[in-house]
Length: 288
Length: 156
Image 1 (cartoon, each protein chain N blue to C red):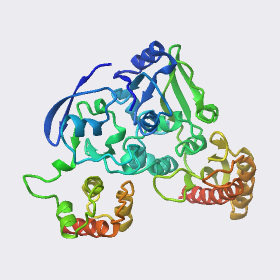
Image 2 (tube, helix red, strand yellow; image 1 turned 135 degrees about the vertical axis):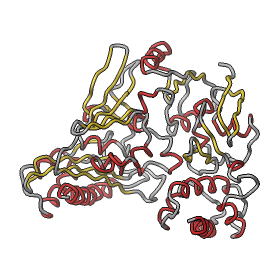
Image 3 (cartoon, chains in turn orange, purple; image 1 turned 45 degrees about the vertical axis):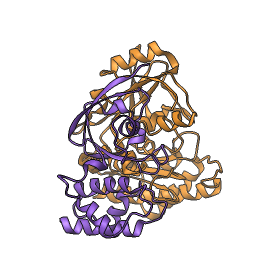
Image 4 (cartoon, each protein chain N blue to C red; image 1 turned 90 degrees about the vertical axis):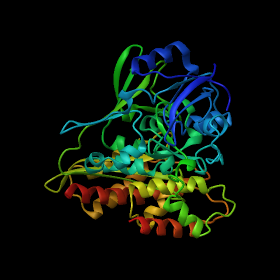
């Protein structure tokens, strides 16, 4: 690996100060599962790396009944996969965490890293979009909150400005009679990247859908919502026929490319299949 | 950009080592601490040959910076046997003749040991997922699964 120096801050304020001092060349490392391969292969070069693993605030996973979930940016995929509270109320988040890499990678890889790398295929992004989560960002001019729907700007680009760092992901509680699910298609079940990933979240009141969220990964430059498909469901009693109509509508939101993982046509097909399956599971969980 | 002192616990013993800021934990273990059980296969977290336990959890030590292990506890394959007695998994691997070239075995054993520590009676699927992050280019997976199944059965 090319040489760099490493600083070991213990607070978020210190991280921000280091980012400002060292300028845009400085890179943050938490799990290192994306950064280190890029540094080793020479895809990325930097003289300064700032380690986030010694900042306790970033590793906090906090629940408050009714008011939602606060996930520190350096909470690992493995923690989200195993946490009983996350599994109970936010199963799509736990499911997406369980799909990242191998167990050796999930014990390192963090939610913040998965999001800030801003890959179109980021597994942990669609559940957060479907849950109306917000990014809590701290920088030299204070703290700001950004809805996840506007966090990603493009492939590997986010709203994070100079000196800013993602501190926390705030997820509102979905409330009673709500259910969610994340699924993806990969040729290999572990250590692979989604050809398509879909998260759905359904909230019901007396059998009628009051809120629907469908989010897609790997079919556009950023993870996206399928808003038309959501409108097909809202205000209606959810039947298998309606789910099929929503799944077809979700295909229209996708703008996939053809690459070595799959053709654009195959990806559109997968959007329909995975939207149907995630909505069906979300419906069952909302009713349970 | 100068060497720093890494203080951590390795295989139950406090260790101090001079490391470069860009050394990985795997580099530190192999080059500075002299434990060559963990192997570098891919160097990018795909093959699992470098698997060690960090605070009891299996990690790819090629993706951890050495200084990220400060004040933490590391267990390598060298620390898996206790007081000269092989871990039940090591014993089962020997009896089943699992190693062929042997390069992947330290990583597989550390992944399997973490699985059994957390899930003493794993299902077939849990065993397969537990070592999904470990590649064996001799393709000796069948005997691995047999040995892990037997060790789990013996200790349960």
